[in-house]
Image (cartoon, rainbow, N blue to C red; front, side, top):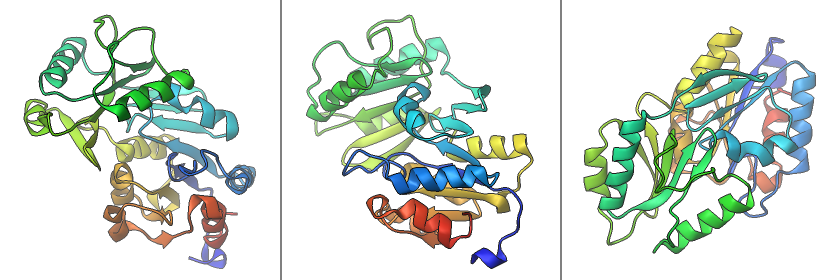
Length: 269
């Protein structure tokens, strides 16, 4: 859609973080993306982060980019203009059973909640989980408690598996959880009925904005729900092929100013 064809109505823009706003090569948000988002907000458009990360894990990105709100944890926590519109945590007793099932089936990872992420005290046999734990600790995202403690609740979880793990058995036990296959034995696990799409729907209804005036920007398989839901879907240059059937505009890589390029080409700025 060229800029001449766009209406003057305000838009709602929803951005994934990793691989979309934040380069996974440089670990940085390009200045061009920051400036494009700033210009969009000056024009009256609303800007939201829509991420699988839980709210504490968005602290760094929120310090770099001014937004109107954050849709976090694949739809389990939604905050707009400082007001919490929705918050879901797995019921406590159910959470205890989920932790037990994960341990019994030989997977490991991070339990993600509103107050932070919870990790095993013991060293994981998965090197990638140890790397994740180190990154979460560096970012100040870990909660006050450890995985083994029973005095907290969580909203979702991220798991790694290997040849010793039994993921099929685990997910057979977790009928109330949707496991998003992130490839290479990784799974993002979200309570059923929650997704980036449900969060978007909540925000659009809250502001009275139609889907035709909403734009989503993403790159990975956990963006699939919002790509299926949205009318205008911007696909980053490097992306998961599962998103291709739903993309309405394919832009450049993050590092090649893909966000700014798309927003200009679509007439948003």
